Length: 100
Image 1 (cartoon, helix red, strand yellow):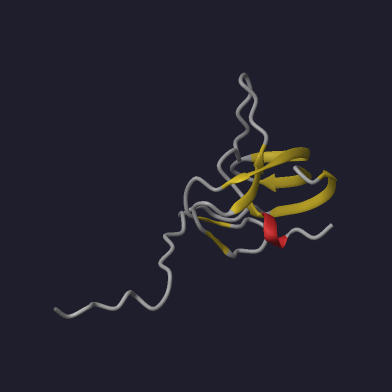
Image 2 (cartoon, one colour):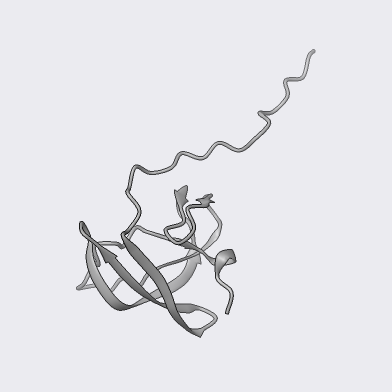
């Protein structure tokens, strides 16, 4: 019986979302949180938005660096409250790219 080799590289399906016009990390108040400034014509402006550490639930692209994110990677995502869903709720920043 002949063994088939696995594909040489990972395949990551990037979402068809456009990157935000401006995104920057303002502060890291704790190991679990970031304060992010976000500005985008489609999803609006967030001057000091809190992002929390989590694990990626799907493949994506880091909005800060453009690096692919794989399901299970540690990421920062916008904090979501029960009564307030930010327009950029599904965007992510790869945690390994944050150095504070």
